[in-house]
Length: 419
Image (cartoon, rainbow, N blue to C red; front, side):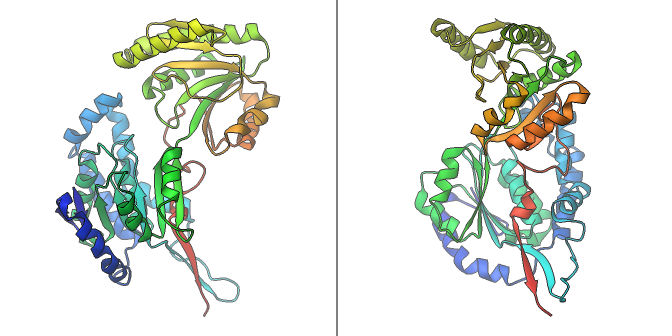
């Protein structure tokens, strides 16, 4: 399915429509400017309809599939509200972003769009491709979207509805359903762009860099690793919040806790903590309801193989959840779906251990006594962590950075004109 200047076309017209971009893009960039105010207003109107239930039929099956409450969904769609988008612009671009003060010699400054963004979207979060385009629009860019496999028409539906809110947006939104194997077509699209926005893991990032030359900016939103760091003074209430987060996210998000580092070198203390957290994880698992049966079965086999091979120091396992005590100090992926590792990591070794994962670090759920937080937060940030939270690593706060940077800064540039 193709969306081109507000109209839906069959996939068979893909090559013809892509060829049209060569003449359409300069014409559009030289025409009426797309202002953030128009995008904010259009998204705001769409948000009001979503808040009134217009998209419930589309959203409810997805919420059920991923175990997301309706209340959380309503909070998530607030990201499209006019209030939140205006706040986003002020936070990411500065309060004077619309009319910055000139330099001391009178040189006028303006933050302007990169021009054309090519979004290579991932399919692990429904609605994310449309939101990526919305951010590109907010920065004033013309946007070309490569749909992820299995999108199912959600992105085209949302973006078509957004165009209905303001016809000017039709000139700034282009959606193509191009398989990742069609590298020649992807290269054509990438070469139209001033910036390539890449969602996905290392393979996707490497592939994107082969599509275009050094004069095109690559903006990577890659897979990240998140974890918890706890001290022996961690409160049960905070550990319960961490266990709820693990059950709610099934550990499949970039912000999901994969495991817990404990500030100790004592093996007995590590096992005591693991047993303590295992009891809490079982309790929250019962309250939340069991994880997907297929994933539980897969992890049962994985843990059995680990026992046979002697991979872990000790494994606490029951009711479809597990806590594995491990001897190394590496930040690794867990088996996910309510299976976590616990490892010792004295605070003096935080930086040396975590620096090995430079570029991959995202969120750390810090669970400690209050008087320990400042020192530990400083060490975690210096190691490369970009966000330190408490028990809920996946909580959303409007205005916070994305993986340590602001998207609108990445999607714009500064132009300066002398008087």
